[in-house]
Length: 544
Image 1 (cartoon, rainbow, N blue to C red):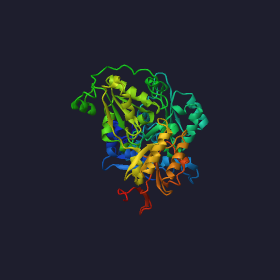
Image 2 (cartoon, helix red, strand yellow):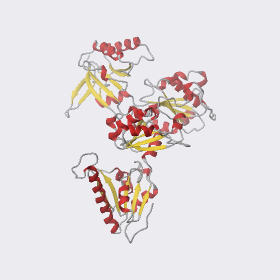
Image 3 (spheres, rainbow, N blue to C red):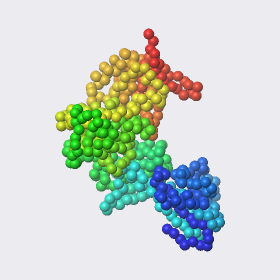
Image 4 (cartoon, rainbow, N blue to C red):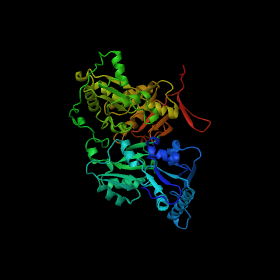
């Protein structure tokens, strides 16, 4: 949008920067930012500006910077006109500051996150200045588009209707609008999150809703909205109801198997490539498969994603994920892999390991390069064993299988506490879904009697509460009450917590499926460091 210039004044540009990734700044926006005499941006009272941070690489020396500092954001104010009065005065004063530059013949660029006219602060400058100066708006990628791309889920198709809503609406009004649309994006979460979740539940849409935070930035987070802790939600986040048609074709939440293969039908027919036998292939062929250079050869790579944090993903795992044609795995783990438009993503429930493995092997047999993703290390209570077990079937004997290790949850939790695994230790799972409790109990007793440090996976779930109680009773018969215990929850994830307690004080009611326990041996120590923190370690020597 451009108005005719008046006199020899400077020109005003409202420039959209996109959602956060500096590479999503348009060529036009970058050119205008670099050429501007004055660069203005909004910021809270702490002075930091997300918009300036995105544009930093496009700024040049000698430019005048105008930081437009909000007098209030969500706090109270003693302004006689209240919050709105303080904001109105701020916009008027900011417009006057920019007008002074324009009157002096300086070109002014106002930086705007996302798109300037999409819930952007620039529009308040535009309304006050566009009638007097040559004003041009440069559109940017919106956070809604970014969130859709991050999730790998379309917003709408054909005749579907997309509705964009502010989370500040009353939950009842919001629920009515959500129930009446196909797809939706709900902006401005933060303090409104609980009301938005209430509205989604009332509209019967909660199970279809996704949460995306700081899309395309280094602090990006996404996942099913129902699982998000309200206390962790910032303002720069949104709720998304993707295309219902996309959900119907397998791009919904994790509980809904994404491919009909998991319901017992065969995988879609793919062009067959030259198959390589794992037993007969020579080293060169295996190297080509491992590196992804042999585009015509199918195979399965089981990839460990680590316990959660992206920086714990190994370069080898990153290369394997990038080379894959298909991603297969439990829904939340697949969602941790950044979308690649070239790839197909196949999510499923976490209780169909064998079906998932068979599906991956069948795709590979048809010439696809398949990455089966696991949290942590795929060889520790995860998909590597499931794939190899299913691959014993003669029909998949010639499908290449490669295992890429990952950082395990036990290692991650141990690192946060110190070095509790510094001497001999064992790893046990308390889940009796795939093995009887009698076996778990006998192994736990043997490990306790052997004085091993014990890392306990799957300690409890909503339906398994008694097992941990019985396990602690057994361990307390072998270990002193003050034995250090490390409780790690969601380590590497957004809700990470690490707690150090004792065997006597550990309360089973505080433990759930997202926890991992490390129970010390007779030699494990918990010491207070000079900064007041507690470190847990097991000495490398053992008394004679």
